[in-house]
Length: 179
Length: 179
DNA sequence: GAGTTAACGTAGCGATCGGTACACATACTC
DNA sequence: GAGTATGTGTACCGATCGCTACGTTAACTC
Image (cartoon, rainbow over all chains, first blue to last red; front, side, top):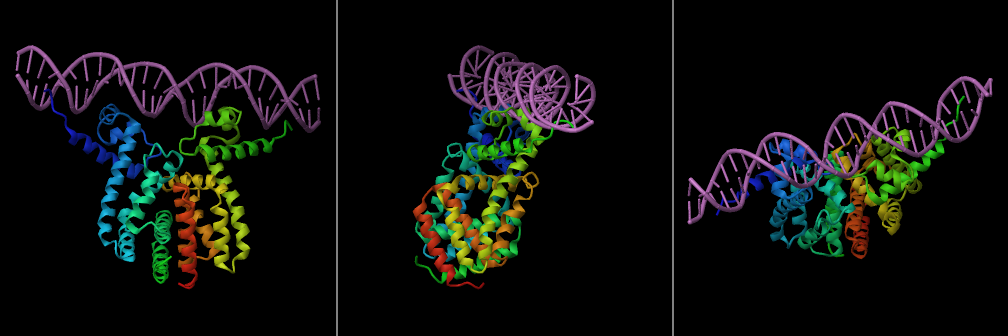
């Protein structure tokens, strides 16, 4: 009995919070500015999420879930590693993905310092990809290459040079597929 | 006239501050805990460095200077790219370098969000390496590969897998040296 | 209607933040 | 010694932090 819970409200707030941290970052996140951007109050954020710590945890989880969806689309093509790599590269190097990867690398840096706070980030961040590509040395190198190129891309914006580097490395690595 | 300045005191504090952020991170840096770890007061940090913003700026500059020293040792070998790469990899993948790279990737993430605050970090972080290796697509790919592997190493600690990935990628890329 | 629970606003708590005012000690020149 | 500039300790400022106490309204069951 009593008024029924409205989980949709919390989901709306979480979605909006994710968009907010994409734009403003996570390192200096403060409840009051976030709340006013979401047209609510810090009081309500604490009410719905329990506290700042739990809010951040749920934000990171939500982002990981969004990204996991993209990963899952790649999984069926498991047979052809280079096809998976090309598709992944096309999706991730797209300009629309840049805000996501700025956030991704920001969380990466924070998680290296406080692993428990950003629950499971470090374990998933490599393992999820190796599960798609296979866990051997070649898969490790391919993930590292793509990640390094994305880091270059979001920091320099020099798309032509990074694209050329991907094409060269891809053709170079394609010629030697077995470790 | 008057008491002469003592620049050595500031240099000591800066060095100790660098060691502190290596251990405690930069994202949540606070003057008072830093000061008490350095056996001084926040009052003195502000006096010597002008403020938190300037202190952070000088810390980042100091770390970059330390690292630049290592880069310069590699420069003379410019003729042989793979020799440079191997030397760089051996130095950077060493366990003693891990604290530095945790800090490096933390600053990287923060700099992506606030480029002006971490002055020049993003410009130097790629350009300095391309100046050593050459600015073409191959150099970009090599830097990306190493950086991605280091990111993997500091986050998973799985040295065997990462080492194997380096060896495989190195031999694979060595066979195709011209883009 | 009464009872109950969810959702929300207002106002404030104690703690900590970066930075400063002010006094005093130190080390130099003259 | 007087004069001067640096280095340092104490104590505090206003602002902001995460969080909570308290009251009110909304939506449901009976």
